[in-house]
Amino acid sequence: MLENEIEVDVAITRTSQKGITLENNFAGVVSFLRRVYTKDLTGVELAVTGVPFDMAASNRPGTRFGPRAIRAASTLQPYDTPYGWDIDPLSDHNVIDYGDVAFDFGQISLFPGVLEDHIAGIINAGPGTLALGGDHYITFPILRAYAKKFGPMSMIQFDAHSDTWVDDDPNRIDHGTMFYKAVKEGLIDPKTSVQVGIRTSNADTLGVNIIDAPEVHRIGPAAVIDKIKGIVGGNKTYVTFDIDCLDPAYAPGTGTPVWGGLTSAQAAEILRGLAGINMVGGDIVEVSPSYDASEATAIAGAHVATELMCLYFAGARGA
Ligand SMILES: [Mn+2]
Image (cartoon, rainbow, N blue to C red):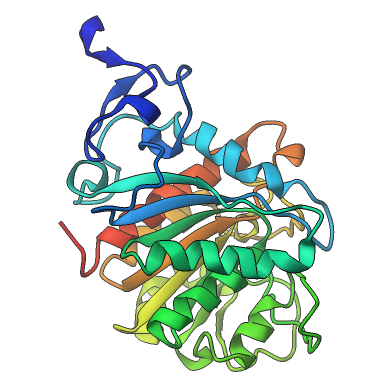
């Protein structure tokens, strides 16, 4: 590597939204994977956006710092094509860091509408979104924006919890009930949706398919991939990844950790094996830096985000 090949602050200085540049990992303006920070959606295919909201957490808070931690951890990733994929999204596709959603933390009741409008403003201009949470509630306003564009979708949810606990109060903002509401509102089709990694009890599945964590361990990633693909088929599919799907050994920095979860290796293999699904958007949520002394959780979250970016481009939009 020649010294004069090293650039700095490419998040604000790069002239092309495609391409891999060399920047000291520890230096410069931080953006997700050193993508350019911009609100200009012209020609953009995927917009990464932070949603630093954690007011719906039932237990430990702190995910409001998740987007910042994931962006920082993403700079630790190597400047090479993503491992395990035969595509190179950073060179061949237009990916930007759109920055964070703006909201008033003192007006919590307004937040769902603000986030839905934020996402709608992006996807109605063309690009898909990859959201960096935030607690898992954020997926609900995002799904509302997507369903208005695409109609009811399939959803692949990686999670320790179903998040479908009963909640018929439309005003409650809760990171454990939003998929109950998403099914009831018709945002997602339960019969063609699947939850992976579940290891908490909830008798009423609302008809959503479940591949619980013990099953993942028992049948292994290859069989899990086949089952997921059989469930979602070619449907428009939203992919939401709660970092607590991973075992606390791999992702301790999260609000509601549960033992017996997936390894990071299992998650990587499953995400790569899903190449070809019709993914319309996705998110990585519940990274809570306050409980992440080793930064392992932020690193895992950044890797999941990279895998989701690859998965987005590995289907119909493929290189
Ligand atoms: Mn969740």
